[in-house]
Length: 76
Image (cartoon, rainbow, N blue to C red; front, side, top):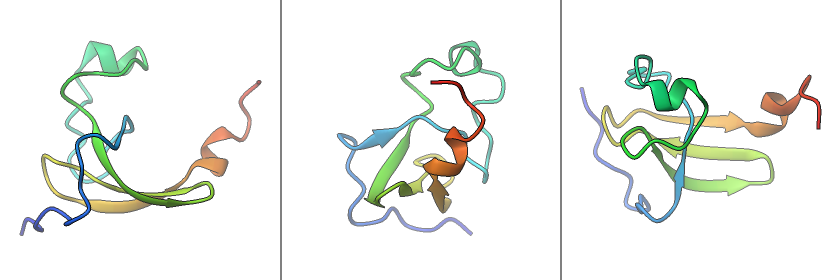
């Protein structure tokens, strides 16, 4: 069952991360190169510090991502 888009979904507030619901960008060369693709972006619904709340416009899946955990182990 598809959820409706969040009322705060605004195309001007976007994020480029993989959707755990549909993984629609798995075969996209632009996304695999870790570049911002015109097709595979997510709505950035809200954030509180490093935690971002996202919604996929394709499958409408909603999830929260802790970006501080995503940065661990990366060299700056």
